[in-house]
Length: 278
Ligand code: ADP
Ligand code: MG
Image 1 (cartoon, rainbow, N blue to C red):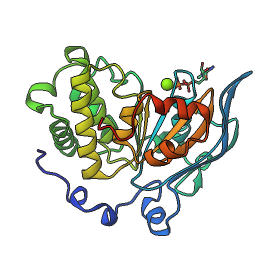
Image 2 (image 1 turned 180 degrees about the vertical axis):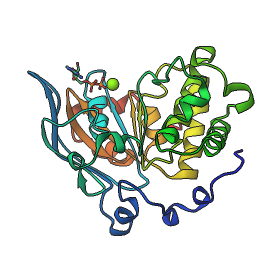
Image 3 (image 1 turned 120 degrees about the vertical axis):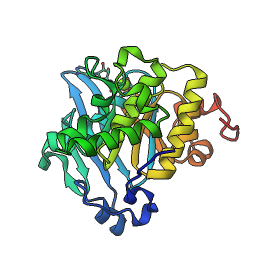
Image 4 (image 1 turned 180 degrees about the horizontal axis):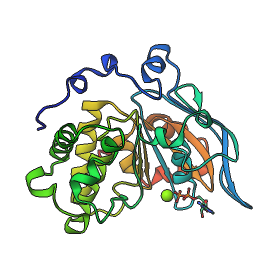
């Protein structure tokens, strides 16, 4: 396991307190949601990528978003790091409208794994992982220690992998690096856009285990986009189902299974038994 783990990350979630752009501690104390969409929508000309959505996510929660290709999943999560600006409604982060936060600064406090991993191909693994710490102005020694630690956590020995380039890695290894990069700046929020999408079943299962271990250890508020319901059931506390730009339902595994609010949700659930281990 990791060496030199920063003391704060060993603390239980309820006492994990540090200065945070999203005012996480305040949100946790008051029971207010960390993230909120209030009637937030996005259109591109006549295309409604996302119909108005109301949604709340609490500190430490893992929310999965599931839906077919083109259903608005990426649009929804990108509202939170301001890669997408809403056409209508409000996006609230730590109780403040996202529009009041500096977008560039905000992105330094949000870990993001985009759909293709998004590693910079001409940068080494180490430099990719250290991207946000570098932007945050950490000195070299601290950055190197952090990248070593994170690579270790995701199962890549720094002495072997840190100096490699993304093209010298397998797809699974690239995804691990993308995870390490997303966590490197100790973000307030982690947005994962189909991070396991293109992987073989064994690598996927391995990364699922790693995801759960990270969840236990760091308790980061996370939104995970997937098109795999079994994956959503396995990894998330709640699941939101999107179809054609509409958020049809959001709830726990049991709520979706027992009270599907829409025939589409019901049909989706017939493809998997919620009792079945996945
Ligand atoms: P998903 O991630 O679920 O596959 P997206 O959120 O990427 O879906 O897209 C939802 C819809 O919005 C799709 O119809 C897509 O073509 C459209 N869309 C997304 N981004 C843009 C854009 N930049 N310009 C025009 N249409 C877009
Ligand atoms: Mg997408």
